[in-house]
Image (cartoon, rainbow, N blue to C red; front, side, top):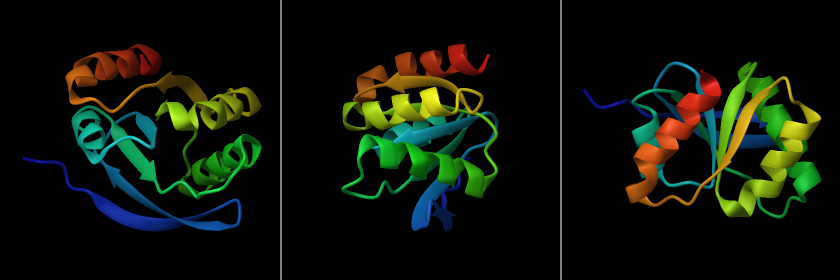
Length: 125
């Protein structure tokens, strides 16, 4: 049975943010990666895919990520980010180490999905 994807809105650092969620289990925040990556990871994890606001500095994006976690009640998550979002994800991990189990920077190529899933499993384990 395919995973159901639902869409909702959360207020994150004062920004109304649309996000998609699918799967269950340990939480993975997906920044900038494709829907195919989200669906593949959702077979093993709870995947949250927020629509990242444009024009934020890394510092502002890190605060926004904190707001996403706060608004959704996420206590801890692995962050999977494309290279564009690396700095924001890393900064958030430095600012809130108790909330971030790890940051994985990955391209969204389908050939790397098994490797990406294994990397996430190592961080949530």
